[in-house]
Length: 176
Image (cartoon, rainbow, N blue to C red; front, side, top):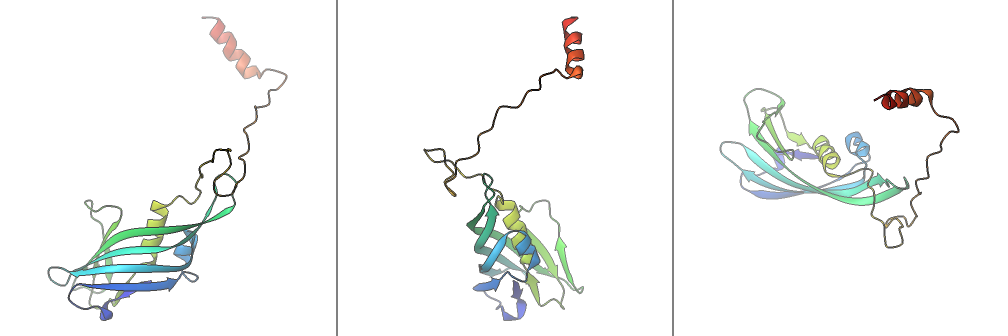
């Protein structure tokens, strides 16, 4: 998913984008499937800077932490991108200690025609969603997603003999 600068106006505007994730490895690895939809509120700031406030939603394939069956979830992530202009060519991601985990700052040169957001979206999904959720149990102690009863933890099997290492520790303790 890419925001093209040439399609933007100087004043505040909104932008809606939609993208199929089948060819985007970063999103596929994060568990995102199907189509994602993004809504941007774009504000022009001092100079040629712009603030992109994004809401991205889509579907997520996760594995149940109880039965390991695949589950379908929806996600909604929000993040901000502050794009500043610079005279040098290229795009530079700027580190800023005062920014939160959902805020990004970039400097773009005159040769940059847009911002690719695939890695940001994948990062936000990974930061905000558990890819192996452990669903709640209902009143009958069944998983609310798959309906299965979770396996009971059995008693650990005890060997008929005592480990000699434990015997030495026990003898050391008895000496006190």
